[in-house]
Figure (cartoon, rainbow, N blue to C red):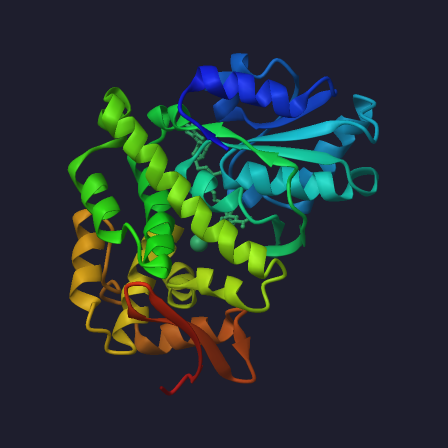
Length: 323
Ligand SMILES: NC(=O)c1ccc[n+]([C@@H]2O[C@H](COP(=O)([O-])OP(=O)(O)OC[C@H]3O[C@@H](n4cnc5c(N)ncnc54)[C@H](O)[C@@H]3O)[C@@H](O)[C@H]2O)c1
Ligand SMILES: [Zn+2]
């Protein structure tokens, strides 16, 4: 549930937690900014991909043992996707599984990472190699957390939000125009814009929730959420660029590779929001193909690509890499 402000959020969180013992696994930066909203025992984690590892999982578990947290504890993951992924993973293995609630505090967390029950940590430099699929008991947040989010982080979440709208075919242009015209700080200062922001986030969440409900284990329609990701992951690997930025370029590639008539529209909307749309000069075709081969969606030398035929019309295609 996405609350309209901190007041509603506190009430909602209290209701969801009930009288249980809560231990918050919380992003240290979020703790500095908002720690007072969470009157619970806390275990701080650093939001850094390099520490999204089994070592951190073990350290969190050691703290839980020191705190004598038993099986009826509720673990509350508070932060961006790194923190909610770690919390969800710990909750699914600690004492063979304890209750988990999530409080995403980034836009990406709200529309993507905290939704769908995938929990993972990195191993040997590979992202999300170890993990579980287990739904949290609840997800609750508020748009008010976004007031302190850096613009570059807003953009990463926006890319995934626009991805959801490209899949559903609803709100893509309106949402793009809204973010092109207003910064999040400005949106939060105005009542009408606040509710517009909240509504867009809720719509994006509904797209992901709908696909997850149909295909929790990711064997079918859930794969549509990988729109832009086959090309995007390859770009991330080749250039080290941020995930959402890479996905934005990836979505343009997903349209171009089937000669979509909507390619100019998609490019314009993404660009107007400050998202990149072109593969940076210096990234060779060979390097991209090599990186795509390593992507987990590869099957028998062929590559599973989500293509964008039109806004609202996406499909999974098995493609030969030479294509
Ligand atoms: N489980 C899933 O289905 C899923 C889906 C998408 C992404 N992910 C994972 O999510 C992670 C990325 O998530 P993310 O983009 O939220 O990154 P993140 O957790 O690193 O947060 C981004 C940055 O924002 C800071 N931050 C968090 N909340 C803030 C706030 N309210 N104000 C100011 N700063 C704040 C963090 O400290 C961090 O520096 C990746 O590890 C990715 O693998 C998981
Ligand atoms: Zn993504």
